Image: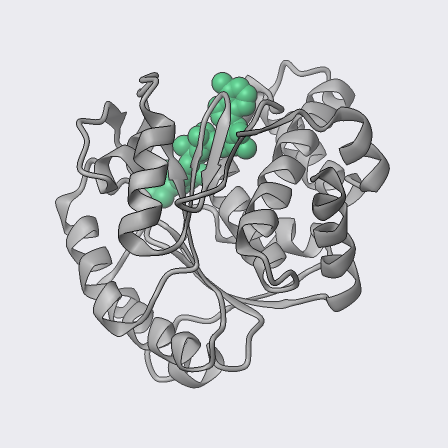
Length: 267
Ligand SMILES: Nc1ncnc2c1ncn2[C@@H]1O[C@H](COP(=O)(O)OP(=O)(O)O)[C@@H](O)[C@H]1O
Ligand SMILES: Cc1ncsc1CCOP(=O)(O)O
Ligand SMILES: [Mg+2]
């Protein structure tokens, strides 16, 4: 199965997928730089009178609801419609949906305009979306429950998409297949944007590799391995230094590193 992950990385590097992102103002630059670093081509386009057409030109669409404004809300409905019409993968990061009820209402409405290919959130967000009691604090998950796999599988079946819950161990499920990604570093929780960047990478991989499950696993493994390397090269103490190293290390993840250090449990 690891060969599929290196296949996905090679496909991304060869195709340089255009990723149309409508995302939050806090980490928009980090998402763009992480996409460039991995070999994709980001375009942050959210004007309501641009997105319907633009979403149809992209390799994938990334919708991150972190700072969802009224203009962005109109834009995401139009963008998912355009992408769905063309069969373009749509990746959703339901930031803070466990803390802000309006986000869940928006996600429900989005389902009437198009379909999701992947939903990637932290464990608290995914459990909240799956209708389970979830421990969250704003955009962060405080949930350490052992029901993450069940939440991912049930949400994947309900929405007919791939679902990924990030945390100490990332969970990826598509209703049938599932895996656990054991790589990563706690330093990733000490900067803002690690989850957003992980979501952007999922969109990058989905824009180049047909199998959304394999693309999602490859993206999250890339993020976690880059985090491990950044902790090693930055000294692993100061978050600002770590963050700078992280973008560098995303660009350096390669087949050999995935083979050598990837710790993925296929269930
Ligand atoms: N305790 C941890 N140990 C190792 N890696 C972690 C830990 N918590 C999160 N990560 C990694 O950090 C990234 C962001 O995950 P997470 O913090 O769950 O997202 P968010 O920032 O959306 O809350 C993911 O790549 C995840 O694997
Ligand atoms: C702090 C914050 N507030 C709204 S969006 C955002 C960034 C969240 O980033 P991540 O989900 O990667 O922690
Ligand atoms: Mg997040």
